[in-house]
Image 1 (cartoon, rainbow, N blue to C red):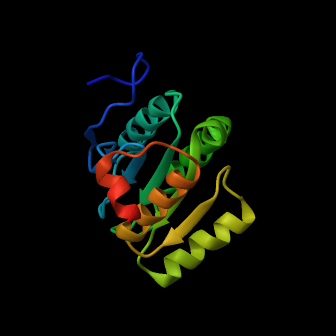
Image 2 (cartoon, one colour; image 1 turned 90 degrees about the vertical axis):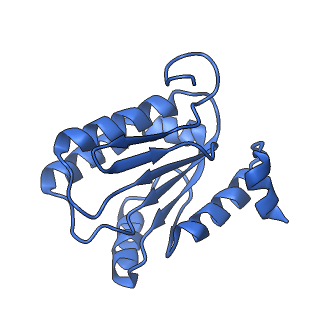
Length: 159
């Protein structure tokens, strides 16, 4: 396994930061999944730090952010940190990402996400979907359209 920041391809692993999941086993899909219970500010910072390290790899990818279990807004400290993190990494997202998908099963939460995307457009095309399966399907097609090589398990979804 190659750790972020070293030569070679991105690691294909599943890592946990408290209850936040960062999964690259289906690379070039990067999955960031948030849990039902709130997590500490430190856990969020660690998870986003790891994602930032993954952005250093000069490989195109598609990020899925799964908030399907989230039942309440994160505290203001975490929203502020996430916004600052996103602004700091805007250029890397533009350079290394072909798109993103937010998974939110609730129509109301999807509406909130859509409104946020209208107010602050993301650096890459981003969709809001109901299920992780929809997000993966969208990712596979976006990666394929961008000419990003897909592993056989993802390429099979194109048939």
